Length: 198
Image (cartoon, rainbow, N blue to C red; front, side):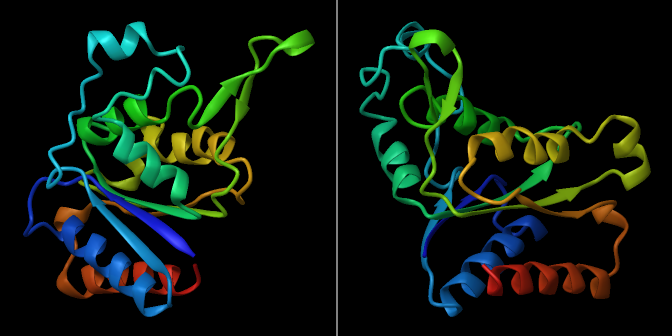
C-alpha cells in the first residue's frame, strides 16, 4: 500500500519527530511504499493566499502550481498517517494550513448537482486506512474539558472526508512532558505496532 505520512513539528530533535520516524520505519518494514511528507522541511506555506481563496471553487483551476505536488501525493495515497503535536487544543498552524489548502473542491470533495445541489460528496475513496498520532502537553482530563478538538475532528471530519476507509484510528499521548522514558518508549512501541497492522 502507498502510505502518505504527514508530519507537523518544526523541531528535528522532538519526541514527536521520533514518532514520525518510527511510523515511517515500521510501515516500510511492513512492505508499504512510504511517502514521507515533513511539512516544515518542505517549507509548506500554511496561509491560503488571496488568489487561492478567490479561485477556491474553480475546479480544476483552484490547483495552483505550488499546490499541485501536494495534491498529486494525496491522490496517489492509499493510506494516510498524520503525526503531529496538539498546541492550544488544536492542530499546529502548518497542518491546519495543509488541510485548508490541499483538501479543496475537486480534490477531497465535490459539490453535487441536481436535487441534492450543494451537498458535499467525498472524493478520496482510494484511501483505505487513516491513522492520527498526536502528542499533548495537557492531561487527558484538561483536554476533555476543552472538548479535545483534534480527536473530535479526526473522528468526524476525517471519517466523512475519507468515506471509503474505516473510521480513523487516533493514538494520543497526553501529558507528554510529565512522562518518563519507559512511558515514552511504550507509546512509540504502540505506534510501531499500529503501523505493523496497517
